[in-house]
Length: 302
Image 1 (cartoon, one colour):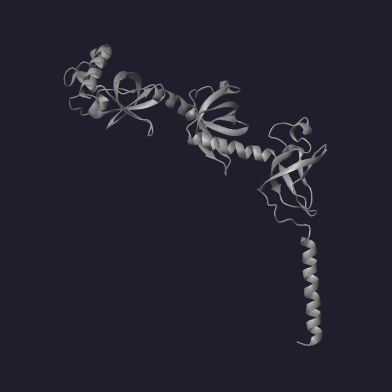
Image 2: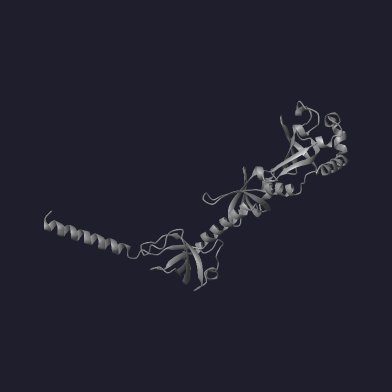
């Protein structure tokens, strides 16, 4: 390579680096999208406000990013010269200005709070805002949530729920996919579960019959009457003993709230093996006295 080419390359290289340096001169690398920063509003205009966040250029927050709620008075939510917390939602433009949001920050805090509530199994009050064939949409502390029809206590007339406030538990809190699924029945089941105790006599309706046992609805809580807990006598087929929709009384013999399981027994109500099979109506009619006697036996056994 001759000396002229070297000089030309050096000149071009020098020019390119200088040009690159000038292009980046106003870029402040300490500010990235998604970063939480502190700053002070120093100027308001009808569409937003200018904020000093310590960069080479001022930052800007549009009016619709000032708060999660509708803003009538910008100065009320963005007071001048007061240090506030913001999140960067758009990185620097050609003038080196970043775009901020307080609204997105509030949304992030709500997601964090709801995730904590789910972890602690805390219920939340929600307002029904819409209805579709799958369930209802709800307002959850300004976020949009959904309760499937199968998780509502009122499933037949969903339109009647619009505008009403329901208490629900969390099924899914997925911040990344903005998915918030709740259950009204979850809260009902939890409340009913807390009212149960071993040895207690309960009454419910049969909702399903399987070869291994019978499922009974106890005010929204599903209990299992295992085939071995029906009678002290061997049973060949439960379908010959019970029918769906039939009301029965039984004693609670096991509770597992973590797994949502309730085990019940009619066997404990029998005076002799097979009495439930031979004289079901009599056993049900005198269930209270039988349950009291069974509870005494259980306590004596302990």
